[in-house]
Image (cartoon, rainbow, N blue to C red; front, side, top):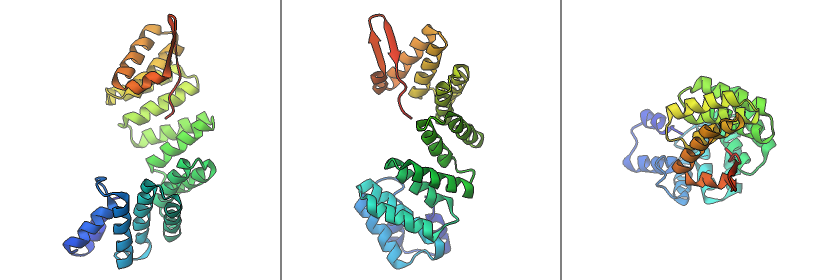
Length: 242
């Protein structure tokens, strides 16, 4: 979350204060979770941010708690952030991500719904909600969310590939191929796009292109080989989860 610029512009911060802010934000990932937690706590104790803007500090500290495996303190901070800034989309989004990781699907969906009401252009929330919809077999809902995300970010290869995945589940294999084509055009090294396109080709009865794409996908990401099964001269594939 890029809130440091706001703070720095508001006042001339001492060098040590800037260091603490950098450790709390942990943008480069170099701060170990305990260090990030300590830095965020110090900033909260100093009352560096006033009013609802303090929610940034609670969200950043919650992220560090998650990385440390301290789920209860993370949830406490997310809840505080939501109470502090009930009209901001970000606290709901991050708490939704937390709930999704705990497989509390209903709570996650409620938070993503609220985040998107507050900010309909929040693409990460659209994507996360779409993935949950897929697990619930709400394929049309997932397709709608991926499509809206692509309208907002049409140059994001992974979104094209994920919508292609939804098309496969909807058995719209021709549309899946088109979406994976675009994903590959934007990112020629996106292994899963080749894998999903190969799956769609297979369902269309185009074995040569299916074999070619699956081979390319496994070459780019050998872990995808786990989803390929061979028996004699026949092969079958399973779709990896998003």
